[in-house]
Image 1 (spheres, rainbow, N blue to C red):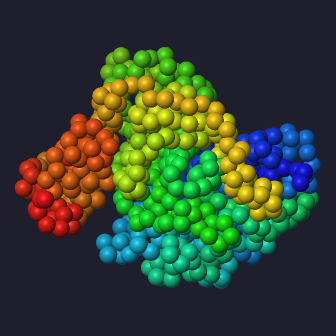
Image 2: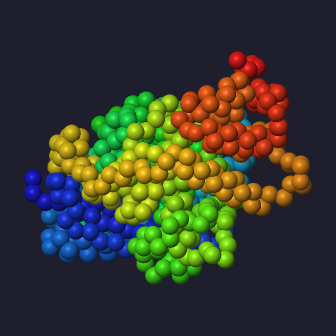
Image 3: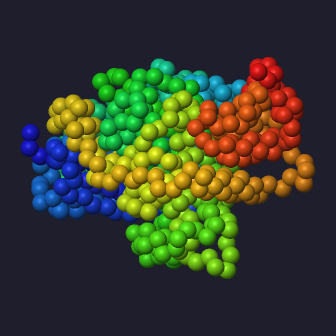
Length: 579
């Protein structure tokens, strides 16, 4: 079968188009940056019509670059930013207002309306929990606040979808209103057991099922391109998948064990669990990664809202550098950060730290600090966040990672990946193709039409580029990470105005402020285990677990073992007293 597979990777920063051959190599690519709007603090928006235009423009450039005709494309796969919420008119096919991007925090108050019991039930049903990132709260906000959306809903003209559904609708000329399970899962509306929209959750949010896209596999032909919309040709639209599961698919995480991290606008760490769906915990979600022939693959996922985007801000916002690819050179002009820590909580802290009031902060500045120290600290922050996520995945799965596969735009940085290996204490593997999200969508489209015959054939295409081995001693690793945890703690106190010595938070609210690792450490400590035993159980140093114990006790307002035991029993962390 001659020809190429076209992948549309519609991320937060822009439209990436790649054409892949049978070996999984890129024959041509193109990129168009898309505009982000921040009309208020914590709000992030994009124009769906601009996204569509930029995707077409980049596709045309890639076709010209490959010196092929549009009819040489055998199938199209779509990889997309998940959770981003688009609404449009069924009659005209035009978007109604801007899309609310996954990073947007405006639905925080909607999430807070739910009782603790309802929040727990939502998490049990959807396998994700309740976060402002998810589409459910964003869609409810639009139905509550946007008059154009309300009028369209009243006349039965409203459709909702994530970016994949929007692009399929436009590519097909309105012939298909569909999404795959990986995208549906992270709307927060999908029941993780039935793999259908959950009527109870829909009722709680007041969302009519009629506006939702149909549910399909990640790899099948949904429709064909409308020749009037797509360069005069009719081509199978044969894959949809969220960008992070797509990257895991390309990184051959087809069975439990292999862990990948993507450094994109945000960072996302995924551990596949196969057909097993594991219960969620704070800081870890358990979404559908993809479905093939009616069978779903699940995973555990940790994430940070801001990662590579911080470099874009240093370039555009502060003018620290002219091009993002200058970051490595700037960082390597200094031996270390000089004690500077950069916490990129520009839209608040997501799980596990979960603090909407936190703001981007830089600690440790002095008169010797230069832009080189700040850029280095920004790059290091990406690695620290990945360690946060990886430790949470390890705690949730009960398994210790032996290596980490990485991809995404910032994976080009040798400095970042070496520091990542150093701060994790395990090897980090970069493949030859770091645009794994795009490659994963292409693989799934190719599977749907028989371009690739099996998962094994796809896995055989994976090639290692560079393996980064840890170079620093454990004592230095833990010293650096302890400083990061301290910086996170300080950043999380931004905007907190409780009087000294007095907490206005209930005990349950204070429990929510603990990270999953702090909960684990406190529970083991209250059960009578020594810090050495806790250190061995959690695969980390005594110094780090001691810091986490201290922080957990401070957040809960307890100052000795006896009060820690009583509090843990009251909160349900311990059933009885110490062992």
